[in-house]
Amino acid sequence: MSAADLLTRGATATCAALAGFLAHAEVALLLDAPGLGPGPLASAAVAGLLGALRRPTAAPPSPRPAVWILAIALPILLAVGTALVVGTLGSPARDWDGAVGWELRARWLAAEPTLDQPFFADVAVYGHTREYPLLQPLVHAQAIRLFGDGPARLVFVAGWLVLIGLAMATWRRLGVSWNATWLLATALGATPMLASPTSGGVDSGYAELAVATTLTAAAAGLATRDHLLLFLGTFLLTSCKPEGMLLAGGVLVVPWVVGDRRALCAAGLGLAAALTLWLPLHARLLDARPEPALLLAASLGALAAFVGLGIALAQLATPRTRVVALLALAFGLASAATLDGSLVPGALGQHVAGIADPTTLAQRLPDLLLALAGQAVAVNRFGLAWIVAVALAVVGTRPKSACPTPGLAVLLVLGLGLVTLAGLTTPEDDLPHFVRSSLDRLLLQQIGVLWLLVGTWGAAAVGARPPDPGRPAEPDPGSTIRPTPAPAPRAAPPRDC
Image: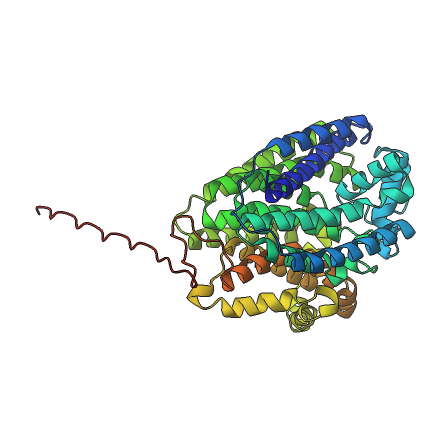
């Protein structure tokens, strides 16, 4: 088994194990049973084993990485990983959302793995981000119960490793050489914001790493046509943060526009399964106290209709008509949510309410675009990733340098559009504060997709693709052996009119 196959199997097994664990835990919480313990762990083990046994598509052949490449990549990754381990073990979450939101919920779930406890059930108890999805708190809480409070925070370092492994497996399956793959993995793993101890970093306790990793899994499934990985990535992405639902919708848009029914079904089922489990829990966390069985049946029916509508619209004749249908549907949903704010409760609903004020949107747009441009050139946050992506987009106007993975490009553009929309509709009156506190973190969620696109596009631009198996190999310039010319094609006999 090749190293690329091992990476792909490991990434798929990890995503499958997380999906099995999350599904079991959410069903248990919905039924007022303990959401942690042997049951979710057994589901994670079975799902992970099934994911590991699945045989992935083989990566194109490539020579082993050069020694000097490994001599550069491994020490850098080891140094960054060591710093992250020291940071995670040295202190708990050090910034606002990590301390009062994500890690606090994990501690309460570890102490009492049910939603029928004062922190979640009593509205008199202050709970910041209490209505947020539960993937990260559940995983962290399970680690606390297994390993203790301090070592449990190593799950964040494990997420960083999964992000790098997912990206490396995807680059290899898309034909990027081992040398380029190791250099790209080093650039991704050493992204300044990921290695930073401030908000959004790996050891900060925020959920940006979880969103970036699961979005990368979904993007990898799209790019490599791995429908299982696409399903798992979309399912997990929806359960990371409120904006994960919108990002999963962006994943759904790509196969919808191009008319790829299999990918559309995989992404649609992942989104539908995640929302079917999450919506009843979300309503309960908002103290709606619904009947779980009734709400579960209602969400199943609504989401089945949503997936059916998506598949039906995918049958439209051209990508242009699909885009028009998509925009019409998005406009209708946004209008309905704006007219009745109760349709989108919680933190996401605050942004939806901002759509109803076009004057404020127009006033904020110039400053927000300028702030986005400033973040793109902030090498102390994202390195050269955005700068290289813009350069490739300029070079990509040439026919020979066109993007080899347009789905990743579309997904990244949609992600940037959602980041812009979040800045325009933020309930904060102080836009500079939003830029300082949130904009870089929202862009960090796109870092995996960004580097996947940069890696595949850059390798294609410099001619680093593996030779096409259908073409004869190019002769060595220093060799005296010349290939035998192919015989001229035989002319077809004339046909009678």
